[in-house]
Image (cartoon, rainbow, N blue to C red; front, side, top):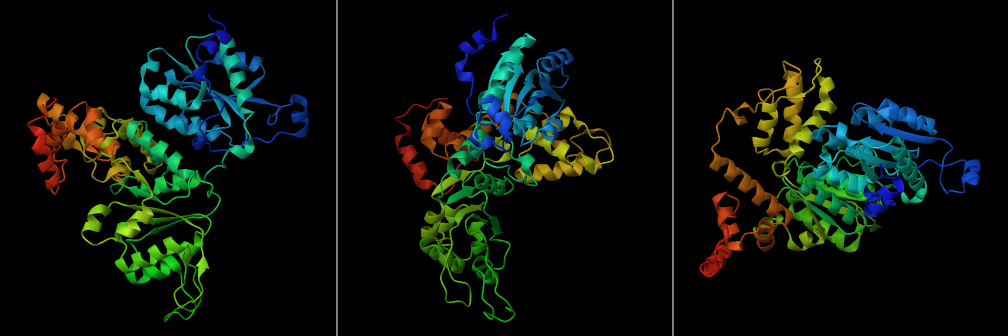
Amino acid sequence: MKRATEILGKRPSEVSLALPQEAATGRMHEPSAAATKETGLPHTQTERVLLYVARTPDETLIAHLKSRGWHVTAARSAHELARLSKPDVVCAGIVDLASFALRDLGGLEASLRQQQIGWIALATSERLTDPGVRRLIRHYCFDYVKIPVAHATIDYLASHAFGMVTLCDTDDIPPAAPAADDEDEMVGTCEAMQQLFRTIRKVANTDASVFISGESGTGKELTALAIHERSPRRKAPFIPINCGAIPHHLLQSELFGYERGAFTGANQRKIGRVEAADGGTLLLDEIGDLPMESQASLLRFLQEGKIERLGGRESIQVDVRIISATHVDLEVAMRDGRFRADLFHRLCVLRVDEPPLRARGKDIEILAHHIMHKFKTDSARKIRGFTPSAIEAMYNYNWPGNVRELINRVRRAIVMAESKLISADDLDLAQFTEQQTMTLSQAREAAEKRAIEAALLRHRHRLNEAATDLNISRVTLYRLMGQHGLRDPSAADEKASLESFAADEPLQE
């Protein structure tokens, strides 16, 4: 058995001096003056706390750690770990990734993100070949070891992680963000979601306007909230307004407010949503449904940073960050004259694209399990999971309603299920199981379509980059998009330009 120092020396890149800033969810424990004086560390605590996460905790390891002065708390599930984690207590953490099924690892990620915990991962050689496991270790853990391993080595690494996490400055850690009702749905291990998380981290630190584009039900409001909670404005209000749900004749007063006597029934002054978000973030959801007359007023506010309440003459300075979102294709709306181009360019300084559920691969199963655990108390039965046919149906279904539809189907299935396992029939997706035979060519065609959709999404429909990613020519990509119904039928100019040089470029299959 190699000594711990040798192990650490061979993998310096795996040791993080600070956990990812965007994932922090708690504030570190403030030490007593006596403890600080005794140890000389800026942030420490008298008790060495350690969280040990495993499906079946190793009692001999726990006994050894306790003999070394650790106060050990064991958790056997992601839910139990979330309950035991204390945002005001600095501690070390040991997570046995080999003991959990791959579909359960997504549930652990929220706790692994906590910056006040220094994580050490235990894994087998086989488990380390999984990309999702490697990502969790790389992003959230100070180090890892392959098991079996000596208990003394684990103790050494945990002590190192605990010592390093106590050096973090309290002021550098954002306060715990209030959990949204659908917080569990914003998880993902696929590349499209990881790209989304990276984009959120980048745009959160700026004050520029953000435009979020995506289909209905993909979680655009969750993304806006995540940007706000990771921004310097996180302590100020986050005010959402659905531009499509408010009658157009009331939208002006909702946005900018009104003075007493401005119209019949205005018995007192009302503060509008823009003014209420002063210092914070305003989410203009479904901005594509904003009437043209309201677009002009909003554009004036974006240009001047000032508003006037209806019936008032005073210009009020407002400091607010604008995030807008819509499922409408605003570029088409601009061409049709339904949306102002100058307003679009004011709103779309930074762009975030929400991936549809059908492009998220194994995230579908991970999300389904999260939703099941969250709402399983809706049923008197002890729902334990999904049948293989239900999982197969979820992968085969196209999910036009995206995550919102998945939540509704799983919640309905929890109530209607006749057994402890949710079936494809319970999800009303029986027709998408293997009872519907699929030929090899059909399977290849479906896989090809999913790969093209994912590449186009990653590269925002830039054909050159998507074709390079897929290792095919631009002409081949354009032809395949037509075969799979992924091409904009109005793109006649694009088609003509491609056909003009198609004969000179060999197709790459």
